[in-house]
Amino acid sequence: MKRTILILGMLLLAISLQAQRGTIYGKWTTIDDETGQAKSTVDIYQKNGKVFGKIVEITNPVKRKMICDLCQGEEKGEPVLGLDIIKNLQKDGRYYEGGTIFDPVKGKEYRAKIWLDPKDPGVLNVRGYVAFLYRTQEWIRLD
Image (cartoon, rainbow, N blue to C red):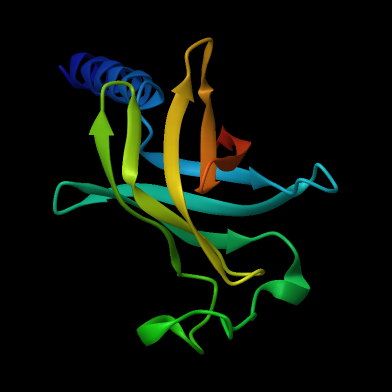
């Protein structure tokens, strides 16, 4: 009996992990454009039917206590660690868009669009827009 319960539990865990791989939700490693090194971990989650992304880890120990001096409103002067940098995205087909992404280092907010790489669900494409100009980063899923 215990063996059957253990096997069922392991099966449910495997199914749940596989299902999560097909979604944008979960933890993602951000990559520094200049160095190619891991920069931070962002947890993408849903709140009130919209998609948000919060910085949950900063790789560089010197920057872990960084304060968001360039933020506006309530977030000004708050720690970057714990900051929601992705806000209010909504699903539109295979894309999530209609919200914003914030760069706490530059103090800039951009219109945002994110989507899973169709060839590799372990890669999240993250695009920030200013007018018709954009930049896309690839974030890597943490398992």
